[in-house]
Image 1 (spheres, rainbow, N blue to C red):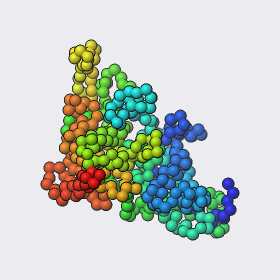
Image 2: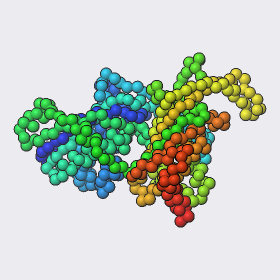
Image 3: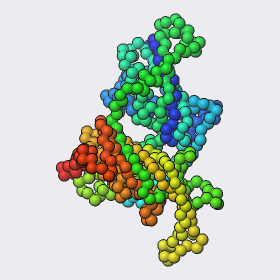
Image 4: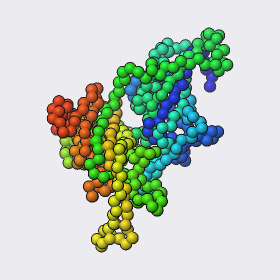
Length: 442
């Protein structure tokens, strides 16, 4: 590429960030990307740039697009000003742990796992490979100035993007809608070069950087978001089994819970599936809840002109203070009603405390209160023990008992179950009323 402009300034940000959720960066063969030289998993700079650009055009500068984008470049605005390098493990001696989780394709129209002729359709089991949380990566962002105006503004915009990355509003890789790809920034070091200055030019050529720690400066202060956040603090009311499909030894139970490292978890995909199923049931029960509300929350599957990405993110939930117990069961032959020979099985269930977290992306929605209202109805059912998760629903497993339901939408609203907090209930009712009003107007 031939640069017509003269490079006057460069600012480089060296960022160390730690995974706080699984990371799935796949190649063309659906395998995790591996650097051929180091043998370590890496994140391509193009993937990082794409995620940052999408956030920038959706939240920071909504007037920018593929044609005009001063920071990332466009067909009319020319070359981008930011360079995103490949991100590698901060400690090359640690290659990280690769794990997988089972999944099952669901027919959304029937909410069943019935098989069909197409391998991509319902009933198909699949496995999600990912890097486990806790791994630290090194990111390098380079901002260049070719003599245009507003270089200080571009620095501030890039620093705000780093902050959004640190709070989890910018996720990387696949499966973002079930909470994958979130990082927390641990440190940010900044290098500045003025190429009209001979000392800076020599320092750059000799690779003798003078960096300063700007972590506190970038990450501190107020942060505004267009995402509504939900949080449920609860404990299990009945045993819980989110079944894993790992290979087990003969002396282990047949059914065990999914783990992330040493922690038992409820995967974000399981939580989102439960929420979607109940939301669709409510939509079919109450005519006032339109299909557009369901689509705004959960999206529309690709395949047509109306495809739409989901706005709801559900994160992995860690079960704390776990207590385990093994139950013996006998499988039943549904044809004869009798027991199946040799079908004795053992399930290891858990009980404990948990914090469930979800976010709803409201960008592009003129009035999102009706969508929030529907999610509040679903989460209320979960909180009062009217909605279960995992296996064993026929024997009463998978129910929760909530302590608090928290909603953040500009202000923090917390309702404590077992209390008579009329103020919080009144604020929740405003969202539910909007949901009902939307149906009456149709």
